[in-house]
Amino acid sequence: MRKTLWIGLLMLIVSTSTYAGGLLTNTNQHVAFLRMLARGASTEIDAVYTNPAGLAFLPKDGWYLSLNIQNAYQTREIDATFPLFPEGSRHYKGTASAPVIPSLQAAYKIGNWTLSGSFAVVGGGGKASFDTGLPMFDAMAMGMINTQLSPLLAVLPAGTKVSDLYGMNSALDGKQYIYGIQLGATYKIKDWLSVFVGGRMNYFTGGYEGFLTATLKAPYQQYVPQAPGGVLANIALDCDQTGWGITPILGANLKTGKWNIGLKYEFMANLNIENKTKKLEVPDGTEAQFKAYQNGVNTPNDIPALLTAAVGYEFLPTLRATVEYHHFFDKAAGMAPVVDNGTEVGKQKFLTHGTHEYLAGVEWDAHRYVTVSAGFQKTDYGLSDKFQSDTSFSCDSYSIGLGAALNLSSKLKMNVAYFWTTYSDYNKPAASAASPLAEVYSRTNKVFGVGVDYRF
Image 1: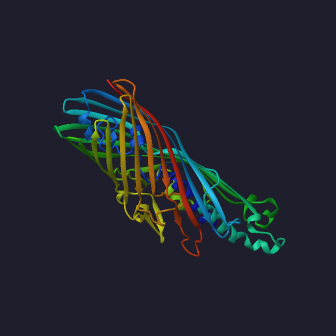
Image 2: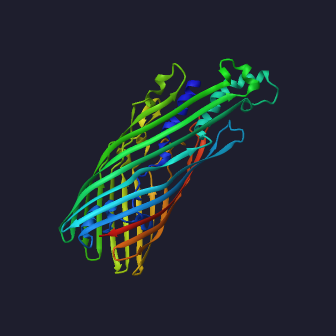
Image 3: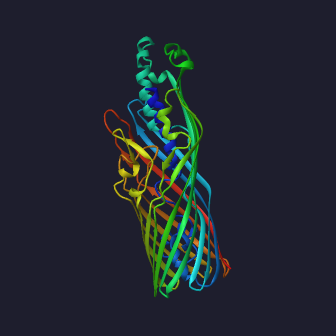
């Protein structure tokens, strides 16, 4: 019984990496994305990521550089109901913040060739803190402790409840970053056609530090001598994780008249993360139950393949718009295994389809020094109850971005933008009478960004 409790807690701690990142690959690698969103047909410096084949249509030969800083704040909230909660339902909130998300893009154009590179946080990008635990753990712990301590009620004063007998304390921090270094070459085949070949090296670094204690209150410790010092559960973890993988990238751009079409395909990056565990305190005799989380063990964390297609149109010399589609091939990407009917299964198997994203954006040169823009994105994951858990959940959403580009000189541009996401709550009903925990998941996301583009 106590073994199950400890195993459940460790699974909770190790699987919280999604709270620092989520299902999406980071596509906001330039502030121009925040202010317009649909940048897949760009032929400016942000095309290093969004449309690398479009770099062939940069206006002049020479160097182009861009430095961007973004600030992101996210929350994860869960409203849970469970029969053993004294108050019937509980509200949980976790926060994930990334005060500084940097990115750097560079391109050098010479004739029909353009060489480009970038450095950015391509996944994760934050630190998550959980100060009051999570409902899955509370429900599991309360169920185990209730079974263990209920017999004591027969010898205690009438009206005493199991929840009066013990206290529980837990906390954990998790962080996750995937840094990407991209290099590639663009070639203009015709005046209207260009292609791109390149790749990105992805480096994963993360870490988790947490503890849990459940302790009998002093007046009741004499009734449970098998719990030395009144400790019902005690566990501690301090674990770093690292890994790397390569993403090959292909792209094409077709430009004719007022139309511009950008295409990009990023292949899946096989990425395993390796544990570097500095502390793992578990009861004697249960070490085998924690094999998957011991030092040196690898866990799949693939970056899914991504297809993007965008069509841009110039209505006026001062007015442009773009529509775009993204598809993430999530079901083909290896994810950490979960136990289903006694068998370990990669979590991606429970998705009903890969992620669909639909984007649209418009920008208007309101003045020769000022361009204003706005964009919209709709995200549809293939979620299911078996995919969702309070340690790792996503919600379908729509996002809106607003901002401006300020032409400070003929060579220097500043981008400023604000971006937020509105999520649809996900209702996960109780699995069965034996597993009566029901939850409602919700999220928030807000990003502010400032960047500068410079042409030599």
